[in-house]
Length: 248
Ligand SMILES: Nc1nc2c(ncn2[C@@H]2O[C@H](COP(=O)(O)OP(=O)(O)O)[C@@H](O)[C@H]2O)c(=O)[nH]1
Ligand SMILES: [Mg+2]
Image (cartoon, rainbow, N blue to C red):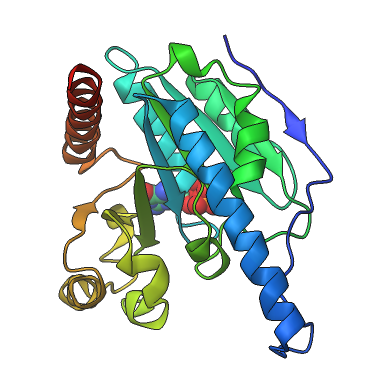
């Protein structure tokens, strides 16, 4: 059953000095916020148990929700997926995911440009985690802010679409370098927008050499099979790893 909920007035964060200053007090506040976040992320990780948990990040409009809609539909017969979505305003994406057949919870962050572990913890209160195999957290669309915040995920997935510029990984290395997978989306329109595939793949390889790269179209379904196989394999891997820990 789908839980569809909006959580408002989440305002837990500080970006330090408004003028960009890095005085000692600002640094200490930021550090304690990060320490707190990491503690809650660790609690989330425990709570997720054997579920595979992804944190998907990209610029606004790259196609995160479109990919999740198709992923939910195409996995419907073998894996139960639940989605937590973060946006500054509206619950549009949670409604889209719900309509695709998966439980979804929207976090409305207001002015906050990334998700934090505590927001995810509150959202997960509205998700029947026990009944899920995979939890996907769609982060707020942004290539900068989400990079620093651990949410308790197993895997970070960074998406880039063909209209954004092949050098985005070089310009925003932090969000790409920790990615376990990089998804290049909207390949159905690559030719018409003059996308330089080799250049984009080279940029990704320079910044995230260990990441698995998928080239997909969430619109037509091209490339989806490899992505879905990767998800299935990562889930099996996690379940096996945890069962060994329990037995051992
Ligand atoms: N042509 C094309 N359009 C896409 C694709 N994926 C998403 N879109 C479109 O891109 C826009 C933004 O998609 P959305 O899923 O809302 O992006 P998000 O902001 O990253 O969640 C929508 O108009 C989608 O229909 C794709 O693979 N190909
Ligand atoms: Mg979205």
